[in-house]
Length: 403
Image 1: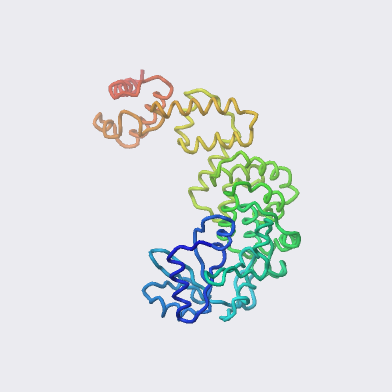
Image 2: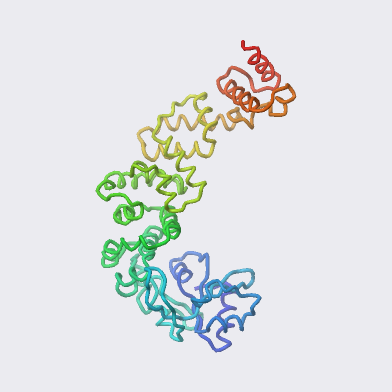
């Protein structure tokens, strides 16, 4: 493994003070897969107080100190340093009741979720792989460390992590692990909705999420609180439609959830604590993606006025994903849309050649300003008036005279 200087420096500092230190988790897994790690985790025999003493209090953030984790800022890079530990009993299917610091890295690795995340690396001693995680990486397998039911009952979020890893890495889930996912899915009700949402989002943004979505349909029925029998056909069809979807979260959510419940998709997502922008976009996509859009400039401008450029483009992508047989019509609509935008044709209030101040100068006040601006925009879109200030002023006078 090729390590950045700030990591080798950190490991050396811990070892110089008599402690063990290993890279562990995602950075080791990603490096062995030939990917560039995005974050770095070090596990060590040093306790948090030792880490703070070695690197200085000013460089250490006690992000998870009660669980043995210190975030070290070194060379403007964050590095999580966690003490070897043994977890106590899990009382809520998520958090251990207590932890015990250990001096044995094997005890620490044995508490981890999956074999591919239980590989450790030290620059001097090399790879430490007590659970054959490297073999599972080579064979593209997701397998728990130890008995799967025990691992999932300890922390039910591991169910979603298994699905997410399978989707993002394009791995198979080992048979016993998959059986435990199905049998333990009810434990997900004990997990904070925000944590489920984060894992679901990462899963959906993977290159090929459809296999996991269909293979573990019962898990997603649990998450969205939808009857499995009702979900079966439409969920599988929607999942396959994701093959044709760009990796844009609101787009994939809208396509996946279309018609799966009597509740609108944005309501299902609100229960999972998605942000307001995502909820609003999914709501608009859901309301429009099953409507036929006639490829006509005036109609397209009205649509642009209602939903905006970015969302309109997502609507067309959703339609194409769900109805590839409408390719020609959708592409014709897209061509007209792109021409409207590239030639700066007016479809929004901010593009009008007059503004509220111009109307006030003409003696128009209060709510009549907004009404007049909307009337002008409608006239421009419909081709009844040019988007030029003189023409718009004349049209206002025409309106005022009631002609």
